[in-house]
Image (cartoon, rainbow, N blue to C red; front, side, top):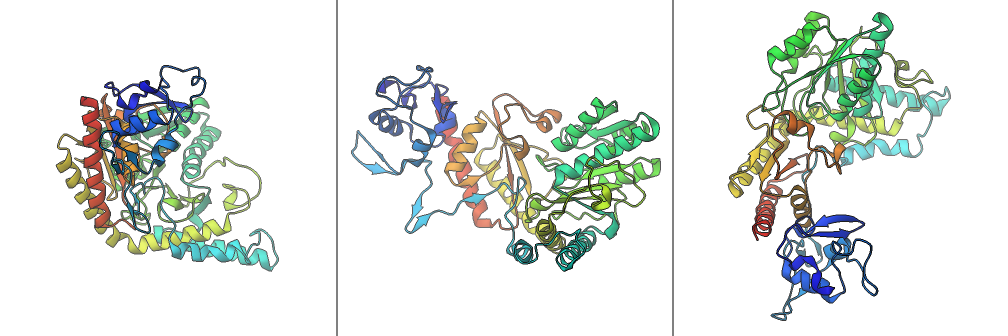
Length: 480
């Protein structure tokens, strides 16, 4: 049975059961030195999982992905040398090479200034903001100061900021709050959004449809933009809410939000924009853009996870989705996350202060990364490349390449990227965003690289080198 270990087989798609689920050779050993790994595994009793789906033979065992990835060296049977397998991150004297994080669109590391602002509220300032005694008053004052800071960062009035548990909750409150209010007043209404919205918006729209709403989905062009005539047609249907995201979380496409907001305002339509990816990356000001509702999230701007906000312009009425206490204008009842809100406010303050300089710096790094990747593989496709994009997002399609193999291979090289939205990780379904722009071709790996506050030019250079190495190996294995 040891002869049947597939890492040495010709067929690159041979199957194995590893870590309790099926993998193929490309997925598991992207970037590894296949013949040497095969011999090492065979010598240690690994068996072909594809041939023995019912379990390993007596005296044998499955060789797990964890074991494979942690092999520090492989002995060459033919030459008797010991070396680090290709694709295993090199080790310096004193420790491992620093990994490169290029998944800031998924979440961002908390800044030290944010952590310092939160610490008192994780310790001695632990009161319930609804209590009238000194502990409660201190907590309430902290929340209201945070509300002032978030409002200032957005150009809003403090009464227009509703703290939530994150961007998803803010999106749900905006869509379902508008729909349920309209249903209560008129009995029926239209809900509209673009085809490339975040799943939080799309799922909210679907929930409204299940409750009786008529739904309009706006198509996009090949770069992910909502055409003006499509938007005008949707607005003419007089929806109770139209939702179009400021900047797309997968491909980065920016929409003409100011124009859309003005058109909706002139037509009496409530306009919502999911600005979770845009806030802090490009200029987002509600005193300059007449949107009625706007969602933001803390953990996308180097703040804590689990907290966000919905801007609700004065005069807009929403039906609550949660019931209980009277917190957050009765739109988000429940004891507030004081430490999270304080950290969020500090992160928002820093993001607004540094937005202009960071936008220019990160955009230059993103463009340099794109140039290097195209030079490494000139057949790659830059999704949304013909549109104005968020400065930190780069989504590329790599023909003749397995997506899982590419992600794992880059991770083995110490580079963290995403296969798309982190919110649909593990899903076998193609990206709804890439499908909407007509770019979900069979046999093409799509990956998203997203830069952030700590990204450096040296990391961009190393990431591009790793990409070239891994893509070359995957294609060589597939060709073999």
